[in-house]
Amino acid sequence: SDYWATPMEFLQRGGDCEDYAIAKYVSLRALGFAADQLRVAIVYDRVMNMPHAVLIVYRDDQALVLDNQTPDIAATGDIARYKPIYSINQYAWWRH
Image 1: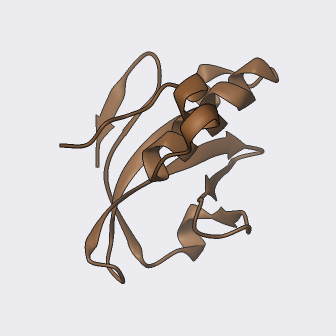
Image 2: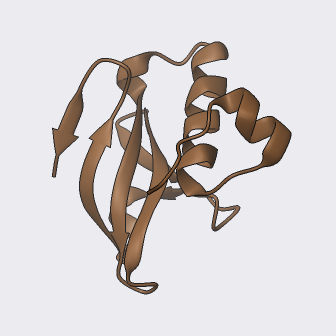
Image 3: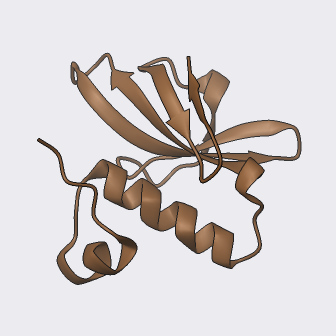
C-alpha cells in the first residue's frame, strides 16, 4: 500500500515521489497556473524498474517534467527512461 500525503503532511514529514508531485501541483495552482496546465503523471521508470510520479507542466506549447529525482526541467520528449501509465489533475484522468 502507498499513502499519498496531503501537502501539509508532506511539508511536515517529507514523503516520496507522488507527494513531491502533489506539493508542486498545489504550489503552482496557488501561483496562478490553471488546472489544465498541470498533471500528476504516474510513469514506469525503465532504469529503476518501478513506478514513479512526476509533475507535467504544459507551458508555451511544451510539456515539461518536474521530477524530484533531478533538479533539471526537461521536455517530455527528452526523457526516454519513463513510460507513461496515467495522469491526473483535479478534473480528470488520462490513461496513456
